Amino acid sequence: MKTINADVVICGGGLSGMMCSLALTRLGISICTIEKSNYSLQQIKDTRSTAYLLPSINFLVKTGIWKHLSKNINPLKILSIINSKNGYPFNQVLNETQFNAKEISKEYFGCNISNCETKQILMKLVKKDKLINYINNEIVNIENFEEHLIINLRNKLSINTKLLIGADGRNSFIRNYHNIKTQITDIKQKAVTFIIQHQKSHNNISYEIYNTGGPFTTVPLKSKEEKRSAVIWVNDSIKIDKLLGLNKFELQSEINKRSCNKLGEISVVSELQSSNVNAQLADKFVDNRMILIGEAAHALPPIGAQGLNLTIRDIKVIFNLIRKYQYSIGSNEMVAEFNVKRLLDVKIRTTSVNILNKISYSDNLIIRRTRDLGLSFLQQAKPIKYLLMRYGLGS
Image (cartoon, rainbow, N blue to C red):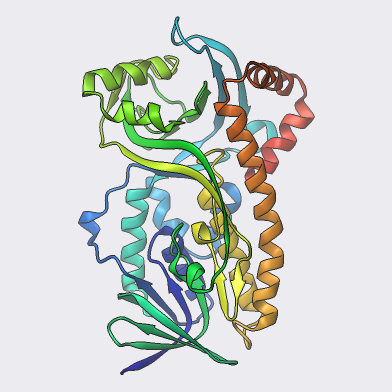
């Protein structure tokens, strides 16, 4: 059995794992990234996109990652939240509240880029980085010692490391291996994502259109005439399953009804991808020389661009802690400090997103009326509106 050494082992080669790997190599440490799925760049298919908020962008700039992504971005200058009429006549806006980045002296809230492009860019960077050993294999067991861990792979390779980072998603092997309990809230919703071409320019505006069942969100993508956007449509599982069973003409008709004509006539230009929507929160994010990040630690409904941005906050904390504990990476003090720094922040944001999601999909008349009044109030109460914008950015 062959044994190699790495300062840090990262389980998971998705967006979270690759970003974490690339960020930590800026500290001059060696990384071993383990990904059990063996896919090529050409096989990457993902209709989702990510809106990177300003604090995330600042960290990605600092770690040298952003310059590789910035050619493919579209700025998000305005977030428009809309309450729409439930039923005929369709496309009727009950009220609309716009959050403009200029109101808090920012050029934009963040930038949007398709996950497919991001994965392809990051994979090329990971494969070229001399400090990253990227291995397509699977962890089978972990041997714990006081000063290090031995990570054993299915191919009989062993890795001697100081710290293991679990970035392996909602069904995390690392989390389950350490018997960390997870609170799961099944909302009985699904999300469907796809790319659209539209008649009107998006003008760097992201629309969140609320109605019974969940939000319909359009996020602008980079294109020559600003006429391409990513869509995340969240609704109850039965509704989404019906949508997925429609032919192309019927589907586009439903999408055009739901969009309140904000972008004009819409055409779907990608495959549809669906996923279950639920909230997950691990009871703790650490164990002996182990840290959980991303959806291995916390998974949220797709509202308010909190998902990957919350993960980047995880990575930023690890980055700073490794600088602080450069001679004792993975120590009890280091992992305990990570747990303290991240658990409360994540719990607060998870609660906020879950409340927003419940308000967004409820067909209860009182909750719907509260939603209407709340948006109208925000339009008038400028200081509270500005505070919410800054909180949404994570600042």
